[in-house]
Image 1 (cartoon, protein in one colour):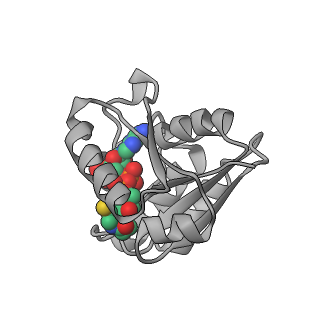
Image 2 (cartoon, helix red, strand yellow):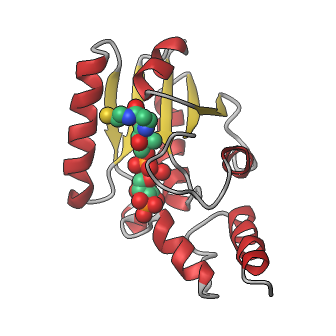
Length: 163
Ligand code: COA
C-alpha cells in the first residue's frame, strides 16, 4: 500500500490544494495530508483548525487522511513509511523554491521521492496569503476556497476586527 504525504502550511486550504490532493489520490493507495506546525510563516489558523478545515473536504476520498507534524518533513515521512512527498506546481515561479526544497529533502532522506503535480490552470494565481488578504478586507473568496474555509475566514476576521 503506497503512501504519499501531501505537506503544506495550508493557512488556509484552498481549491488549488484540493485539486492537487484529488490528483494525488488517483495515484496513491493512501495519501496523508500533513499540516506543518513548524512553518516559517505566522499562520492565522491553529494547526488543529487547519486540520479540521481540510478534513471536512474529504468526501469521496476514503483513502486520504489529515494530520499535523512537527520537525523535519522527511523525518515525518520516514516515520509514516511514506515513499513520496507530493507538491503542487502552479506556475514557473513556484519552481525554484520547490526545486531547492526537493533537492534538500533528497539530500536529507534519499529514500523519499518528491513528485510534482500541476493543479488546474484555473488555480495558477490562487494563494493562501492572497485569499487571506482579500477576506480580511471584506472581499469574496468563495471561488478560491471550499465553503467551510470561506466561513472560517469570515468569522475569524469579524472576530479579530470586532465586527
Ligand atoms: N493551489 C493554490 N495555492 C497553492 C497551491 C495550489 N495547488 N500550491 C501551493 N500553493 C500556495 C499556497 O497557497 C501558499 O501560498 P502563500 O505562500 O501565499 O501562503 C504557498 O503556495 C505555499 O503554501 P503551502 O502549499 O501551504 O506549502 P508551504 O510552502 O507553506 O509548505 C512546507 C512548506 C511545510 C512543506 C515546508 O516548509 C516544510 O517541509 N516544513 C517542515 C520543516 C522542514 O522539513 N524544513 C526543511 C525543508 S527543505
